[in-house]
Amino acid sequence: MKRGAEGLEKRGIGLLSGGLDSTLAVRIMLDLGIEVIGLNFMSPFCTCTSKNSGCKSEAVKVARASGIDIRSIFLGQEYLDMIRAPKHGYGKNMNPCMDCRIMMFRYTKGIMKEVNASFIFTGEVLGQRPMSQRHDAMNIIDKESGVKGLVLRPLSARLLEPTIPEKEGVVNRERLLRISGRSRRPQIRMAEEYNINDYHCPSGGCLLTQISFANRMRDMIKFSHTISVKDARLLRIGRHFRLTEKCKVIVGRNKEENDKLEKVAEPDDYSFFVKGYTGPVVIAKGVMEESLIPLISQITARYGDTPKNADVPVCWKRISNNEGSTILVTAIDEVRLKEMRI
Image (cartoon, rainbow, N blue to C red; front, side, top):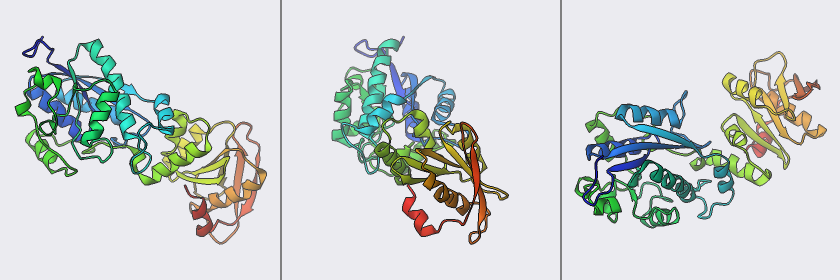
């Protein structure tokens, strides 16, 4: 087993999202003779994904190409509970970046002991993200997660204080980089040098940083006492409308989303569709008041190939018992629809 000058193992755990920055960090460590173990964290909000694969798949692909082992951890209910009231607050939207990073590092600290790793490394770049990648924020994150001095950020290391693995000869600091800021050009040049050309998303990402998704998450937190992983994943699908404090409507945007909505609908939900026309599946969630049925039917009639200035038949039913009926309505107007859109 390789050891540094002071006897520490030359083994590090790399947080690997599958994005370019973490991929480059892995390659740098391998070039320095470090034995790397990849660790991929997933959540319901990962955007480092292709159409048919999630963050885990992208990270696994990078790990295989790099010849390293990888394990994955899903941050589920504990993560959702944290989002309600993160200690360090939110970024521009609903992104609790500092608390998210602290949670990841705490998990990683436990795995360090299990695999006898000397340090953690990440693809973080100083100044790239305004909330969690400031110098002071990095210090807070490392301290509160109990890994102060053990987190190496090879892309920006020479702009930061030397870490324990650098001080003790496990990693050669002179061969680390000094990248900072939000430009992607240095990383893209490095990717060309390493012949890395199949990276899905350069810097990874999180749906909670996107204003439209953040609005949906904010709405869910406001009106739901509890949030499950299934609830959070549902925010990815369709158009969302808030009708009352206790009732929300989701409208499928295409056949794929229609199929998903039908699969994830709960027994107490209500479904709506236009009879005789190609159009969306609409799911009403929460407390259904009878007075809402015409309104939801009008929303349903607004989408698809239905005529917009004539009555059309909208069928509705409760999922649990298929009891329902058909109502004739005219599509809702855009002004009123906009008022309810989340």
